[in-house]
Length: 404
Image (cartoon, rainbow, N blue to C red; front, side, top):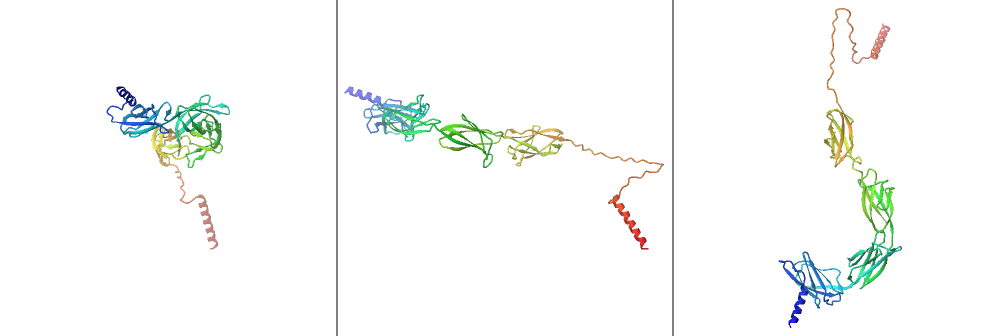
């Protein structure tokens, strides 16, 4: 009787063994039953329980049951494995309370595949096994094109094999205790058109003569705003568009297996231009300037500087007025968002405000004949009118004689 009591005590200790919840936490006991997919209790299975700040382990008795203490209200993940059975994904017990939990396991299996193409083994192929839309196992083929999964549940899976430059191979496979298969993959290419547009405009405008570079493939110049590359399928590419006077744009594109068109957008390099109304300005007068951007559009809120000092801001029409205060050459520039225009030179001209005064000198003479003064013509009379008047008087006199 004492030996039986001792045996039961040892069994209970082994069943409940594990890390206890932290001191001060209220605990609840989960009664976990590990069963096969046919409902058979599995004894000797190891149960791992984990939660945010702790974990515990227990081993099932012959009836497939074990007891685990966990914090009340915790979300607990339960997994189990025995010599012959395993569970792919943990069972989540949310907001744990005392009670019974059934943890189903499936017989162990393993899957191995060797992938080849027309030239032989294909290395570095990304391989995955999934079930119900969830990836269970993933890895890559070795130099011999081989991949072997870890121990998983036996059953049906979706096998996906993927590598850049190849068509994806997706098939259903049945995983048994030891399953080994071969799989072939096929290389492929696809035609992709790249268009280059200037999206400063609405709608974006086509850019001819831009260069499109596909990293690792090559560079072509657009004709009619587009260019076509033949590219290996299922590959991610870095593609850039460049053109003189424009900011280069590099974009990543994943090219699948279908022909298509991709668009790259670029804009002109930021630029300011100052256009003065005059290149010579009287000192003290205002100089009017217009500031435009790289598209010859007016720029508002730009700072206008004369010899490096801000003197005005452009209005909504890109116009500003600044006083030229000293004579000589002055550099006028504009700034906005870290961009500075090229300087234009304006000359300040000084004007003398004094007015010359004429002085008349009178000379008195006591002898001789006084010189005649200047002849001042009568208003409205010119030499021609004088001649005409004399001719008219002569004509009148002649008529008078005839009538005497």
